[in-house]
Image (spheres, rainbow, N blue to C red):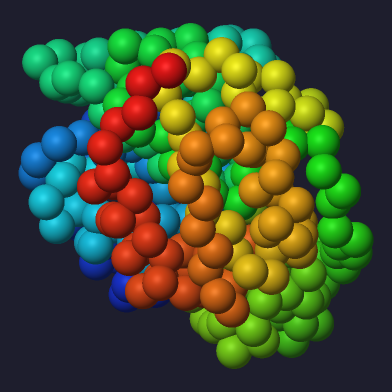
Length: 284
């Protein structure tokens, strides 16, 4: 459902949501809300901060062609309840509880985590190594690398074209690179999902929460980065930080994409993700 005051749900969102199988599992004092598409080996998609399952709107069909794609709203985001504590152990426990209920006979799964979702995915892989087969990090912070200078405009209290212009500027400052990428769908998702993000993620990512967990992983991760990621800029710098702990990992760059690479350049992103999902699993 759209947030209060949001525009009507775009047909692209409504269609993908209509085709989803929906489930709920315990989370804190409420429920964790899951959506699933497709059939086959399980693939878990974890969205970024202030987002929801719809961060993956342009990747779900491609990834679900021969897999079961699970895309929850992370604890404290979207339609899901807050975790009992604001820490990675509680977030991972809610995910593990849900996955065990939803796929009781399933084996290890693959995970793709975007931004904050990448950090959450890495901690999940460290806490529950037997449940994780592959791990792909997308534009993920917590590497103690210099952050880009991001100046966001105030949106609260604005209406009409002023609100639209401010939200457009914020998407270009943080999420997207090409002005043409800021379409009606991106503006809708930002306006609908952002206000529902109640989990404070800053201390769960910065400055080095991903660095702390990388040595604990039992699988070698891979990574995908947008060429023009403004939040975590210069893919070569990010690659070097990751390779300090995993020198043999694969690192892909999506040309022409900003932070939200799977939205801005979905064809290139989906191709890279599908190729990485076919690579042999490297156990450590």
